[in-house]
Image (tube, rainbow, N blue to C red; front, side, top):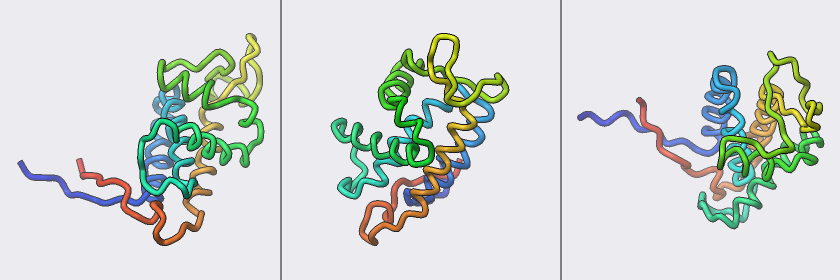
Length: 163
């Protein structure tokens, strides 16, 4: 069997190609599942920004710090994200059970809901298209960040094979 062409990707290329471009398609076609991917993406962006993370390890103790750092990127875009407890309410709930915890309600533009408004049960509404837009702004801040030449952000991240 012939092996497909291999492409080495840096973290910034991964952010642009996967977290922005591929995610756009998923947001429009699969809005509910997009929330899980954005939660994972927030943690990834945080790992990018933490210079003490020399490599891409999966140490559980570091995930809290990484998510917090990624969340700061969103808070700098809209400080209301800081009031949501995204790690507990979205990441921990959604990535483990595909259901957010009780303080967040998920929606999309076509439902007519307003981002950060409250639903009838008092839960904060996250509208995927707005959440994704803000996530893209956070991604672009990481892409535009200057990192030391020896930083993990300037090294190969993963290999992707043409399918």
